[in-house]
Length: 99
Image 1 (cartoon, one colour):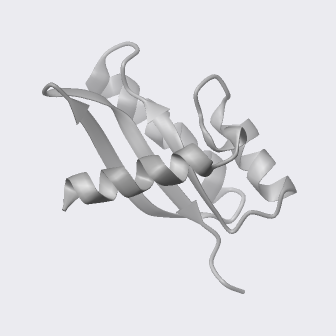
Image 2 (spheres, helix red, strand yellow; image 1 turned 180 degrees about the horizontal axis):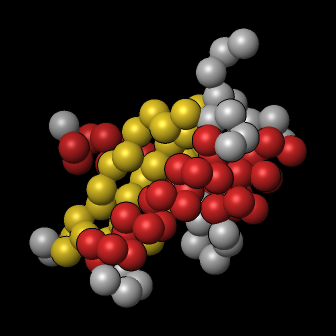
């Protein structure tokens, strides 16, 4: 099941616009881009390979969650990506509730 979900996320990421990733952008900029383009949902990558994985990843997720929450998005899904037993990061999906 997880492999199928990961494959679907990777396929979606391959067709997603470049702004949907958090690679070298700060979470506030990605959230602002989503608002300016009126996106109802955004899936992004939060890298966990820099610094201490437990603190660095938690802090990165918290910053991303806060940036999107202040712009009216809810967290829909947080999927960890683990390679060879090591946490690499998270695919995080945010969605604006229907009004």
